[in-house]
Length: 403
Image (cartoon, rainbow, N blue to C red; front, side, top):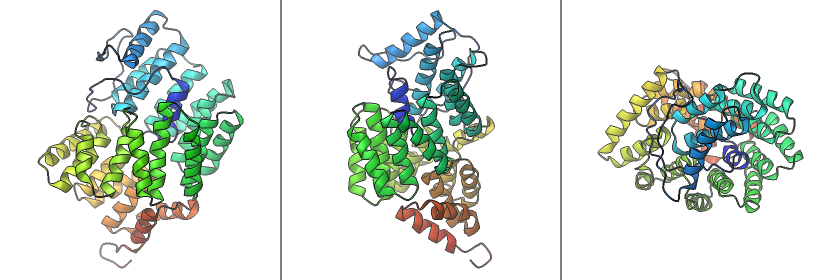
């Protein structure tokens, strides 16, 4: 998956004229594709009379067609496509955004460098993304967007010292919302759940933008759940859902909360119309399997086909989801562990750590989870569930031997 550290606030702060909730019914099984001509029609979006966001996207495309060298227009259109990919779980729009950047020759200006970096991090090319962000900051040292994205990547990589520097840079630039989001997550990931929660809550109180609030409420829900405060977490998630904005990450986080609370029927009701997003289809299939519903087998077959298609095109962005699928739905802990290890070598957020711990326990391979146990010791991450899994993984019995 893409980094989820600060993306919500970045979308709202950098390109406020384009919202992520466009009226689109897309099929996420299609691979991202680069258009062969600038004027090629990629897809016709349904535009309702009151759908200002869809009209804004259409206007941007028309404006860029008339002024194809306009960097600001290109950056905004590319970001709009990326927002749509995140909102609807459709990776084709990442390809469309990449096509916008590809129209321009190197050396790219800072806004397009940053956009290219964002797209690179989506594909897990974190090294390439960080290089582009660094170059953008050489061109524009006060470019807050680059600092915020660097902070997000460092959080995903569990490089908390580097993330701290980016949080400080944002604070120095007077970007209080981004700095608060950065610091709140940093605190939560590094053994200060209570402080992280308060930092995110304070940032929420000073924010009126709906996209900002959605992101902050989602992360507050996650942090509250890690603290064992289920009622508080549920309130944050429901408030975020009440904003009425499409967001795959929010839906996935809320579905995970419901599954952990043994409420699969709620997950089915929540995600029944979201088959197009792989991460949400996974959670829907898991809920259906628990309830022994007829659609469970169909949705598992759809996931198998999608994972196979992703491997065929060299797409590794869903290894964590595939690991969870193999573990919970296919009862194949060996394959799940292999995928979880490969994923954790790149992405090391709490949900990545959890799937690796669960796979190691199921595979009875305590050594494979040592990297997560080391992270828990270094970071001080306080989630009780994660620490219980870590202890269980250390005690799991290797196949054919003693622990």
